[in-house]
Image (cartoon, rainbow, N blue to C red; front, side, top):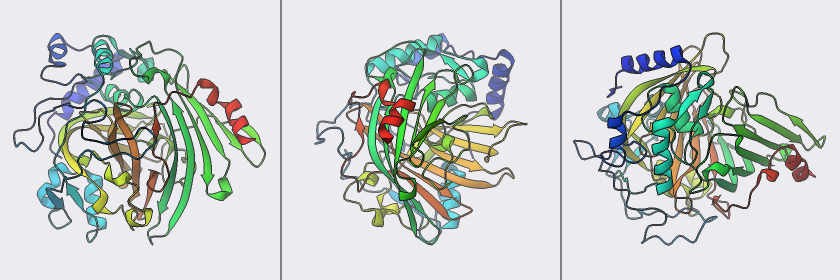
Length: 459
């Protein structure tokens, strides 16, 4: 893997963090001058690459592009690039020509499925931007944000990106997992498909709602109190129908760890779920993904040491509107081994490579993890997870698209591949649902979450 930043420099930054207990994240005067000039307002390099295969950042669209007929939230996403065709296709036969721009997980999929796995490569697009309020909050954070409680908490301004110039692995982690700029309300019914190695599928369905009040467009504030809320009600499989998991997050995992409750439809009782997270199996996925693996990583970082490996150009899922189209059936999309490559879209972009190594004395089914963070959006888009022996076990990719109504990127279907079992989980599918993702409607409140809400929903 060819990297632009040395592992030595990242190690020195991590050493500084460990010695101080808080990250010295303040941007330099030179870095601040770059925001909005040679860099986007969230820290991405505006210039394209020397080869011209990554274009200069344009950011010409905020919300719905003029040529797109989008009928509003709750509808399936509409592709702003319907005429685009692949520039070329990477296959097992020509993979070696592109190896320096592929993750270990992508290479493993080519090796495991040489006759069927492919990556259609499209023109790289950098056309969307964040609202001005995000830029303002991000500049404040560049000057003042800091990690506290040995990296378990944060003190910053909400409504923007946390560290546009991350100096340590923990700073990059917080920026790309817990402190992203995503929709502030989210409601949906989505399908989960666990595709076995013989092509058979175990189905799940979840009714979900999420609330992050601090992410309402234009809102800037302090990192105090509750940060977000979630409630997931199982619809399928039938044996788990009516089970509800709900909880809330805070800004400091040490002083205020995640709180979670589960409603059991059999006993009609709500019980607290202590330490919900880490490598617990995510409900309704048959043990195929862990709780902290959703959207590549979420929750407390305490079990791992975090290191910025560097930055590189990689082919990653991007502008993935087509894979969510209601015109594509699950039967067509969910082929054995992996999703049908015809419906995927990969582009060349710069990504941060973030490494997590399990600490001595801590337990997790993954001994090492690599996460790939898109520089323009600062979302984690891919992950490689290794077992305790150091063997690549699972590789994952989340298909993001720009949600016009939210003026930011939305996490769509995630494909979580178990390379040892030859199976994969398609998580967060909406193709055959009558509605898509309902975002930023604003009709949710704290009352819609927590144990009382789970009890009301279960009656």
